[in-house]
Amino acid sequence: MDDRLIAETREIWKALEPDTREKIDYIWSNPELPMMEYKAEAALSSWLDKHGFTVERGVCGLPTAFRAVWSNGEGPTIGFLAEYDALPGQGNRLEPNRAPDGKHAGHACGHNLIGGADTGAAITARHAMEAHGIKGTIVVLGTPAEEILWGKIAMFRDGAFDGIDVLLTSHGDYQNGAPSRPCLSCVSSEFVFRGVSSHGGSRRSQNALDAAELMIQSVERLRAHQFSDAIIGHVMRFAGFMPSITPDEVRLWITVRNADFERAEEVYNLILPIAQDAARYTGTDFQEQFISASRGYLPNDTMAERLHAAMEITGPPAWDDDDLTFMQDLSEHCRPGQPFNLDMTTAIHTEGVDPYGQDDGEASWYIPLARANWAYPTGVLLHNWAATANSGHESQMKGGLFAGEALALTALDLLTDHTAIAAAKAELAERVGGRELSPPRVGGFEVMTNNPETFWDSTWVSTDKLG
Image: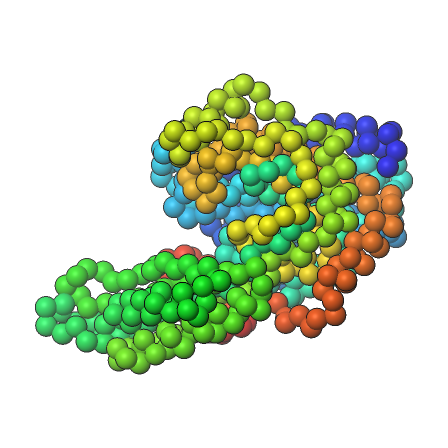
């Protein structure tokens, strides 16, 4: 990519920065639960429309998803992924301490930054392409419900990713740079136990809570011998009203994580009959309400190298003293007395396995993907109120903008050097190695797309297992 194109792309990015900041701030100030991101979707899709993209809203039947396309003729198609959902219970004011803001959700994973910065990157690439007569297509996918590993899998299954040659996205992490390493695969489901309600002082048989607790205890006892390699998480989303009413329904949300997707599925299939047996032993009924199964990232060194080359042009986030002071105070509140640590460099990260899941991991097994990471301090835990506070602060604004500018430059690099796209596809094919991949799977499609409120208030009833 020549110096003139680099310089002019960076000027376009700079001119768009006020709008990008505004979108990031707006989404942070209006946190919305997965599949209920109406304000965020509207803000980003209308922004793309103003810049000449053809926007299809409600794509694939998902009310808060969109697909925006701009084309300058025949050439490669670059896909940008925009996320914008928030996490329940993690609302916090913009302060370096626990200060609940009364909202149902908070951006404790920085998706406000991903949505705003990735969309700004796509708009920047579009204008640079037009100014320089570069042929190709930009597609922006507005992808809801990443926090439950659901939206991108449903969109991929139903064709929203069709025709895209490579994917670009971003995320907060504890390192600046371009990762080319896996993250954890995840299988997610809600187990519903149903019994008979009665006065708690007289009859306590057919107690749904007994069934759920027996299931959890059995899994924990078997873990060390049968599936010690898996991470099994659970929460009881509903476990009764009061001690004097024997619970007639308990809902247990289960996730199984492992670096290997097939192993995560295998462990899930070991746990499922344990839940069924727990219901049988307690005289209760059992229903499996499947949510999703997501592969972890398929590494792609070719894509990571191109992205990191762009980061060497932009340099790492330019944090100033005020930014560092805020992050130090925040880290001290989270982990008192621990040293402050913040990555101030950029690199390609290939070692290890990231300890979380991403639903774009599913797509990465079919389409080469590059992700720009920006750093949080290690003292700030993701999926924690502190990440919500940090995600609304100028310090992380600079991180998201760093990632967005790098993505815009990477898109132009790939559009002007088609050999890199061919090499990334060849690397993907080599890593997959001819194995037959099971189809993308999500459950509860009708509920998620028509009544997501019932999912979040724990009253949903799935009419399918793998819908």
